[in-house]
Image 1: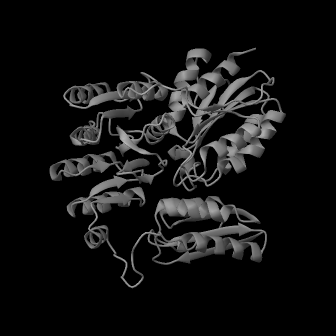
Image 2: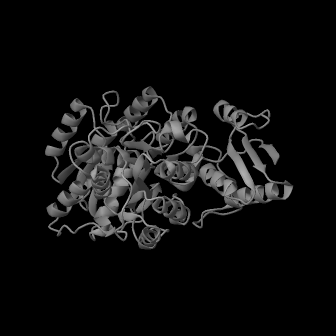
Image 3: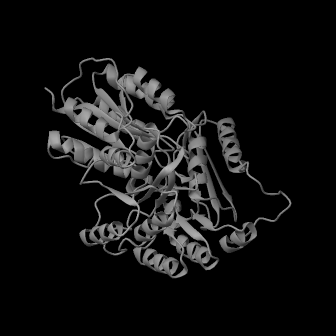
Length: 470
């Protein structure tokens, strides 16, 4: 093995682009490990932990570190990196115009009224503040932003009549345009506002499966309904959707909120002219919230799509949930607990466990599992080899920004688990308009031996039934 380490001075790319670049490099032939990241203290520490020589670099510099079988493999990996970084949007623009150096200048040049901020957390506050000062709504994809900064930004936004989505806002759909991790859904009469990225995605996909489209989906950030933040963005988003004549139903989706904040949001919902449906994990499932939304529109409630695997026996044992979405993981634990009792959240704990591999502790220095599946594949293979595990439950989230073909990597591992007599159940969050093609992904996963469900709650209930059977 040889190490290739270079520093590209004063070269910046946002975290989503670097996630995609890291995945491309790590998938190249002959590559053992790689890190493509900005030269922050955290990333320099990760570089050292991986055994690379640590160069002199700062947070404005990009580090490229590749460990490969030989010089040729390293060169090919760097070439794949350059191809990803060189990719440009097909929309508009001119090569002759100088690139703006600030968020405010970019907004002014483009006449933009929304800025998506995806920079290291400690830098996100200043960028978002500048965007607000230039009259733009803000979506902050970045996490690791201080809660004090979140409160200040949302107060500043309210004073200017601007919405701050985030920090840690992974999903939004604005005027039919998906931002962050979002699915390709048909336009329609439903507005969503929520402190949950995969919760919004699951509802969008369930409604799309029933033939009902989305007007807007406004993410608020995972802490918005906490006591510290007070539901600021949720209340603003609720009011904005209520003013929209095209929104016939509004859905509020969240992990368990602070009690006093939930009461405040419910009071605001009662004053809305538009019907409001609540999808609060812990109170009901996302499938039930989708059904309530369809009923309020007078649309028949279908059984969500499913693709059952051929029936076969499986070994007895615990249920091991390996998730990429935090809300989907929480909902699955809630549903499964009704059958199985206590559900743990530690990969090393005995008994039934549900783990969110998209959590901060798993994604520092590596791409999110919706993009790079290697960490989950490792744990999937470990669960298959563990005789105490009888059922493996996975979520597979499709859409923009996600892995271009997750089934191609998961199917061989699923087939191996089934061969060892473990049952595999998949919660598939996606639509047929998604770039990956939902039904094609479902067929590949089912053919590998997994039972596949569009409803995350249905997948969890099915897995729990298998896990409880002896």
